[in-house]
Image (cartoon, rainbow, N blue to C red; front, side):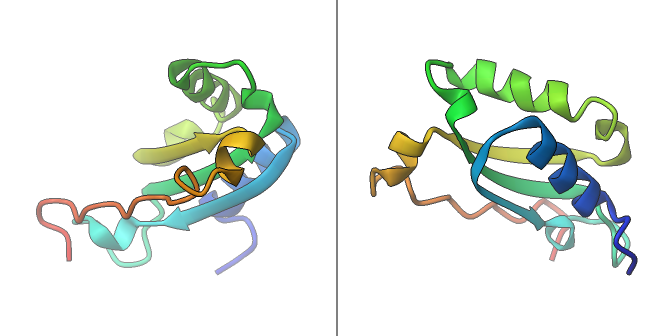
Length: 105
């Protein structure tokens, strides 16, 4: 697979848009009823001071805004967005597993 994957495009876009303390993007397409090798479903963990003072919906809006040109290329993005202070709190540092989709593996 080339470096110009959707996953890499999402990561590069977010790294340019945010001061990322922690960033992780998992391709969870295999959990869904899509062709093998698809890049359609992702789970994002992003820790950034850009989220300070922002409610959850505002954080999501910031990410959607940053990804506006990339979003037509994929189907779903589960987001786990934290400030550094929230991430440092051990209770918040656990990112839940995503469930398998109906029809997925």
